[in-house]
Image 1 (cartoon, rainbow, N blue to C red):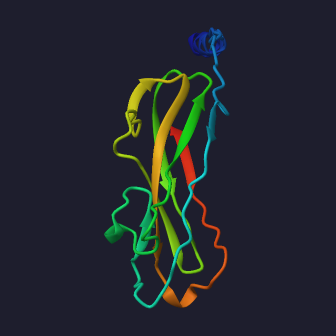
Image 2 (cartoon, rainbow, N blue to C red):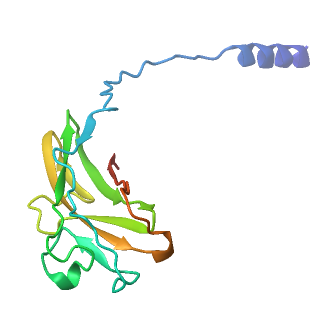
Length: 164
């Protein structure tokens, strides 16, 4: 009789339990798509002259008018541009900005953020909202003289703004 009572007690105690589900309230701010990047004015480079004195590595830059820096455009340097990053809203966060150039027809475009910009956002934590402007300089260099041909060459650059 004791063993039957013990088995019944185990069976009943195994059936007695409590379970409760709790709600978790979240407030979600969907910030996807709140970064818009624009270029108010394009880079402008003069006609690049490739003659017998040009060697691989020679370039034309927007950073200086010095002839020694502008073997491909000795009379006039290129004109810089800027990237405007519009942020609709964002919590206190880190915004990382990066640039990538391209290569075509024996030339490479090497864009850089102007080190004299008043706003330096790379990997900095700030509350973000409104418009952020970053000046961009670039150098076009010859990287393959055998691929150079007369005529128009299209080079591209990509500005990436990423929340980290």
